[in-house]
Length: 302
Length: 80
Image (cartoon, rainbow over the protein chains, first blue to last red):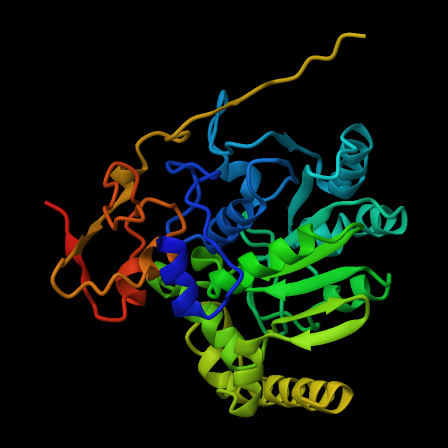
């Protein structure tokens, strides 16, 4: 009943929402944490036959105080640099096709520290899904700059705004010629669930990049977290797409946004971390976003 | 070979009663609710059931449900 109604509303015919919660309530995430929302939907889509590996990141702290955990699935907490390597090990132990191995890591554990283990696991053709939830800083230790922090964002280590651009992890991963890769945002939960289900139906390494607005780190009020995710997609600062065996398809929210993008200023000015950004810097960001839109239009004929 | 591991068990409320963190509590108006499942899908904590009942024991009061409600059937009310 619920599945039917949600399908009708969100327009995804093959989706059914799993009523079971694998991320139990009462965990220690901050109020309005969209990373936890993303993990909640990923585990819902993956179902009970799943082995989860959690890197040192926000998610491992949010699991709660030992000897209790909020993860209702078999979970292994790993060291920072070796999430993907341990996923290879788990997959070597569990060879059954029906059992999913999902590695969850933050942006620091993916683009900075864990990138060599991830690259190695993809090269070894490990059958697993790697989820990078991207809150654009090291949130767990108090918002230090990471390779994924965007241009102009102030963090505790870049108080006057970061001078460098965000590392394009999606392009790095797709250079490995990966069978399936997608970007998602928990502001579009059914889109996220659809991508996880699609990924888990494919054999081989899969990668999912999820943008998760972080209320304390991005200095936004907790109730705006979902709205900011929609603004990021609406302003084309973040594109939702999937690549399957090198065939590219842009997801519907981004396709709609590309026709009539919101000015990037509207996305930046609502966040406290960009409050020190000058008008010229915003102009630079706008030009970069326009160049990205032009690239996707030209390269894929959208 | 012996391996020492610390094992944790899945528990609801692994960090205690997180409802105590709340300043504003969500209250749903049954009349204007159109059963769109937005609050159920977007609650980061999963405290809103598919029947739209809020678990006040663990709701952290982030206000996402009230902000995303298309008919504003959920209001955030200051706690007593």
